[in-house]
Length: 245
Ligand code: SF4
Ligand code: SF4
Image (cartoon, rainbow, N blue to C red):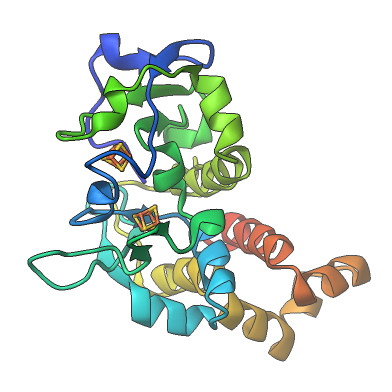
């Protein structure tokens, strides 16, 4: 979710830059990259995947994810739980490919690219950029199909993901936050529920005095009742308001 080290300048790409890459079933490496991976999930990934699996978000998190605290940001990072050694396969990989392809996570859509949102401390936005990942053994780079970063972004359905991720990053880099202090238990719990455990957040919103306290209008109330996207947006707005008052 966060860029651990900046890529070298020659690897940075903007939307009109091109690269040669193609991934398909006939390559000897097919599915090899769906194993033994550290695969962080953004809140919108979890929204899509739990729906694809028809699971309550609580159950999805328990069954398929690992929690850790990111020491630099102080925020929780949720990643996909890989299978047991030695294969350590993604729980969604099958001999035919990805079983959740239409709802695959943002990192899988970006692959073989990485992306820096350009959002930094105070939620300020500098230019976003993309970069090619180092992927030993990936034969896709030997294929001759040339495409631009923009084509890749659009064809992989990335815009919805990057937009939701950037909303989350604006909370992580909130200008009212004292970055010398880690989040306390209550803040962590709010982040976990409002961003990652959406079905629990819905119960919290409808079963407590939340709607009246935050003066949520009728139109929004009926939308968030069955629209997870609207509920996640409400979660971001809620965190923006209560996390660093
Ligand atoms: S290693 Fe590269 S080419 Fe092979 S399946 Fe993965 S992304 Fe596709
Ligand atoms: S979610 Fe799909 S594309 Fe991503 S690692 Fe798992 S099987 Fe591969």
